[in-house]
Image (tube, rainbow, N blue to C red):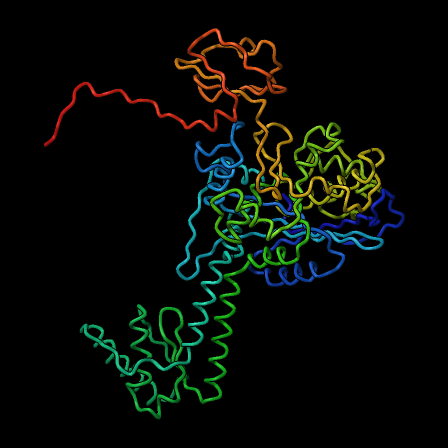
Length: 552
């Protein structure tokens, strides 16, 4: 997998509501910046500057994470209701971790389009009393390893982050610490333990000897805990002559206290540097969450591909704890990202859906790459490491599943789909155009996996329910065995059958029945799905024990 390389792309668009081919090509740079905690400050400033430009129209995202399902009970099922599905993905979002975040910012102005791509490594570095726990799913970790993910870089160089709730707590705590940093220690300290008394006596002696020698500017006194450090501060302030104490600057440092001979001006400068250092530590801890905050504040359309998990994980990890209900989640997500597009949903349900061999991200990207005019390959420099991925070729040479590159593919897929929509969904030829309204019918609709094809979550509809009027539940007290559903529904067209267990089968018909078919077996029941879901489940009776006993 290619990492930390520069990619050049020159996608020329004309911002128009009508499908007009590009008449002038502008060579613009598309750089894939690999971002770790070491260059995050520079990247953050760049993201902020890019988002502030009027030409920045939308952002494409992608994530890599440590797992999909925390246990078998949370696996997606065809028969899930929307609320059940949300509860499952919420558990995933609360337990797994985003390891890599890809961002592609797309700019469009009068005669050119250009993109800026970032590949962020993120890791929840321990800070203060916050020490994250998370799950890893073996198959997901192996998948990442097979695609060249650098786990050492993820842990060693990953960018830290805080949720906004934790950030608020940290900033309040930090404000109290800064307020107290210049205060004198208490004049009286209760020292009851003999070894603490001995430590205080020895500390005073060390300070007096250091001052008397007048040889070293600094003295460092190791202190194993916060109380010992308090004793050092107390000794430096009240254990020696006050005239000497006023010449000492004290500061906690590592596992001890640093004492420095300093005049008033130097003490003030050192105090300012200490506060600046503390401020920077807080900003570093907030870390990558600032990128998400910038995206939320910019209110640009955000593009993903099959992106329900992306947004669930993103919200929990960088924004706030996931709400308990789907309705609340929809409302909260829209406050952060009011416009969302899912290229998977668009490719599955648009009039040109039959043109795609597959709706995987790489397949949709390739379809758009191979049809867009002008030729996408001509937009990339000959020596560019991503050039192979943009060539019209059957040979696959793409660093897929690197979040930054996947975000790039998502952006290109959206460009192609938007151009197709503006072109009456004709894909050959496909002039590259800017048509912001062409995909409006697909706004805020996120694809739902493991449902009937084309099912989606409508983020803007709090009362959304899936239409299951064509679904029927067949149950049998002793088991359905090899019963064929074609025999149960002889006059209906069966689209799909899902066997929950031997006693419960879900049958998806092409259309609802006017009346339920008669059953030949009295132990068999056929229930419309909506009614079945509304009926409280009855727990099976447990067999009585062979003998009863009474304890008085």
